[in-house]
Amino acid sequence: MSTAKVKRRVGKYELGRTIGEGTFAKVRFARNSETGEPVAIKILDKEKVLKHKMVEQIKREIATMKLIKHPNVVRIYEVMGSKTKIFIVLEFVTGGELFDKIVNHGRMREDEARRYFQQLINAVDYCHSRGVYHRDLKPENLLLDAYGNLKVSDFGLSALSQQVRDDGLLHTTCGTPNYVAPEVLNDRGYDGATADLWSCGVILFVLLAGYLPFEDSNLMALYKKISDAEFTCPCWISFNAMRLLTRILDPDPTMRITVPEILEDEWFKDGYKPPEFEEINYANLDDVDAVFKDSEEHHVTEKKEEPPAAMNAFELISMSKGLNLGNLFDTEQEFKRETRFTSKSPAKEIISKIEEAAKPLGFGIQKKNYKMRLENVKAGRKGNLNVAAEIFQVAPSLHMVEVRKAKGDTLEFHKFYKKLSGSLKDVVWKSEDDQDKDA
Image (spheres, rainbow, N blue to C red):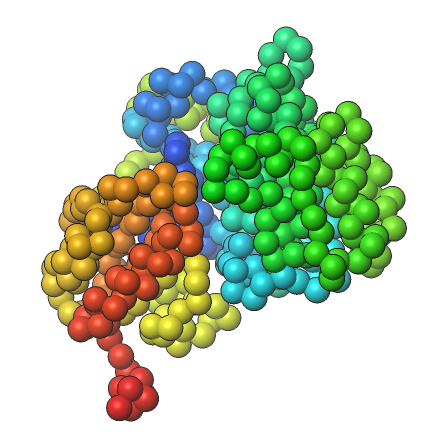
């Protein structure tokens, strides 16, 4: 596989699979061809950025984030631009999402939940001290590194259109409803720091309870529960943890506990170790300005090659937990927002089989080369479920198919994939051991 061609190259980076998507951006795995270092590259559409008048905001956020080198925040390395795209090169975190850990294993022991919460507060406090607010904190945006340490992703980049008005408050309603603070919903302006702390409180509740404190299928009923801070702690949560949760989830932002007060809280302080890291006083910001210059001398070179994209061993290993390649070939994968299977069928046949399986489930299908976008015509809990599928060539006669949620509800995606997998049994490759088990 060392001679396999990559599908796309941006400057010195070889781009691989898509690992995340949002309203304004797509995130792709990449490798620095000079050092071999894995990175994640966030790709923004320049036309959308200009249309929404987000240039100054993005410049300010990126410039600030380049000065942040904290052990619990995903690092920004550099920024590049082409004629149509903006590329933000980020630290690649290999341990998956905290969301997956909760879904797969349920609620955590208090000492484990406390350790993650301590790291979350460390990250939030540091970024707030530099005027950066996240505004979309939730377990899906909390990643884990290879050592199980928490890393906040998208800090300062998730809410690219935020605006602070003359009153010093933010006025854009954004974020995931279940984690959003009451003052964000009432549209009278809010403080980014206290709103982030509310989201931290919801996350702590989820870690300890295994479910959301505020949940309702009716959006207005959900908003009322949040505005009234209407929640009940389960009996297994300790009194001290319960007391801290109550102080964080205070619907009045002026009465809500602050970070300095959290750092002095009895439950929080148990086993607490302040983070050790070097402060950055200077970062080269030339690339931030160059991104928006029209001159071609500032544009990074993009090269494309014909799909299906070849996946080299380096990239294959990066996708596998603990460098154990076995789980890539396991059809009984744990519930995640993405899943993969391998097939010895030709790529075109796999595309046809997915299309045949998805149409009866009510999905409209868009195809381009060896990528597919499936969209459910019926809206679910979080809008229309969008599913992206892409085929990679692992070896001349072996393909890996990645199926992931691009938009919509994760539980709905899980149900969809279970139905889909039942229709794809003929194309999923099984080892001799798996065949023996089925027999």
